[in-house]
Length: 299
Image (cartoon, rainbow, N blue to C red):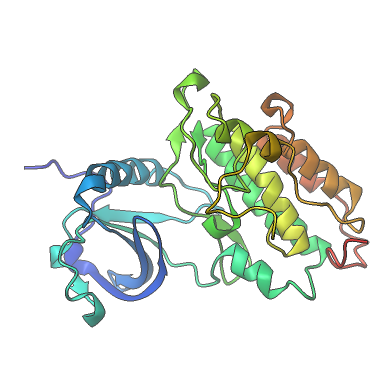
């Protein structure tokens, strides 16, 4: 009999309803656990060839996420490995193989990416740009203080609550940082947000998250998707081209914000700041005289 883990939930208290999003290794549903609204990530174990990989990733993600407690990290309520007892929405009736589920607080505002794209035309006030960036930076600073590397920081892995605050989600590829970075060489993350050293398979550390944050900061300021028309996820990109590729910073961007972007996405990871330093730099930006919105154009 498998020993019960501290994060294991009672599946009889879980009701899974409508689908929110679908990914490579499973889907996210809106649900209810013990009377509270939750998001439920159900892993797809139907592919026998990758079942061991998925179940190992499940244990790793839950073990890391369960012990994280920070206002800018979505709270993991728990998980279950025995989901045959949970109440299914009729649309899930035939999915008898899906037995592993991760239950997280439900954050109603959607992803940061969708939030930003809604403001693509009118843009965001600088004061809100800095607030959003600080939320992400503080969450990452906390992770790094716990020696955790997220490894897939991007706007679609960040959610916005009803108060407009950002929370980090999805720790499926996160790792406890090794004392020797040579232990982390796997190409993990998303093209466009991925640090150059990760793309080429060099040893890397938590500074790969700092690079990704720099791209996210550009995205928050511009309310746009980086590299539109420049990078196609389905096609390989030359490492030499990628390492010099950066989003174009508009002339309307305040120099303090632009400098943080540039420092964070420096090609040399040793020259990138720590996230706790990024927090201090963002906090030092004066938004009290903010008369302009965010990025309007690329003049």
